[in-house]
Length: 168
Image (tube, rainbow, N blue to C red; front, top):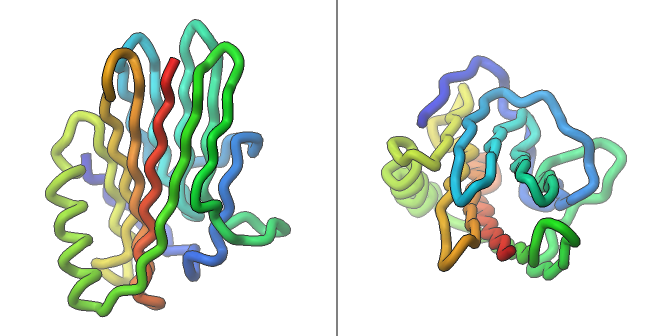
């Protein structure tokens, strides 16, 4: 699903992003709810990046990757965190510095892979066609869930990709 918005792009660069499992919900610019593997997953694009909200009979998870005032930036490369009642949570992030042409190619790939997918949500921000935030939810082996996100920063030539796996 591709969502149109009129809100400006707030993020400035990859180093401003933080990761949290404890931040309260932030009003989203766009959402998509997906029912998968017995769970309700809400994909949320924020003006400051994304949140994924997982609600099921076993528990709730709120993953936040965003620029948050008062919090020092820097995403972790890898996190493994058991969540009682929810499952084993694994998060990984990669920041790539790309030329504008390389970034345009990668953004095109993200559009192709997420915009029409039943588990995809893509927001292009006004001002630059390469300024996007996208999320894509899939199922893994068994009852595991997997989502990837992309945050493109054309002003700094950066592409942030995150991959999360939740295994019950």
